[in-house]
Length: 140
Image (cartoon, rainbow, N blue to C red; front, top):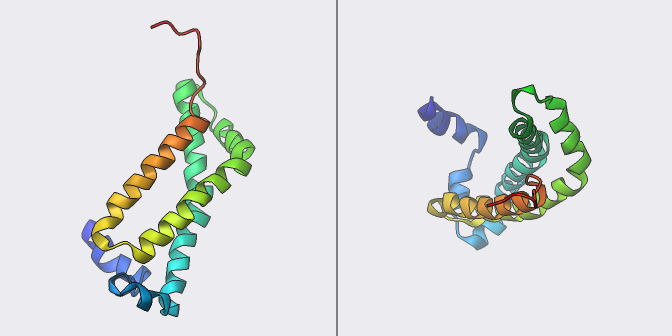
C-alpha cells in the first residue's frame, strides 16, 4: 500500500510537485500553476489538518492521559473550543511560513529534516503553553 500511495496516488494529487520542486527559485516565482498548487498544499495542511484534526486529537489524548479510560472525549473538545482563539493563530503563525518554505523552496533531501526541526520548536511551544499542570508540592 505504501508503494501505491507514494508512486501512484501522490503524483496524481500533487501533479507537477516534483517538477516544481526541481526548478530554480526565480522560475518558481514565475510559475503561476505551481504557486497555486503550493497554496493548495499549504491550505490543506494548515486550514484543514491543524484546526480540524490536530488540536481535537491533541486535547482528547491529553484528557485520556489525565483521566484514563474513564475520560469523556467531549472534555477534550471543550478544551479545544476554549483555547482555539489562541491555539489556531499560534500554529498558523509557525506552520504557514514553514510549509511555504518547505513545499516551495526546500530541496527534496532537506524536507524531512526541516519539518522535524519545526516540529521540535512547535512541540516545545505547545508543551510550555498547553502541557499538564505543574504540581509545586512534588518532592524529589
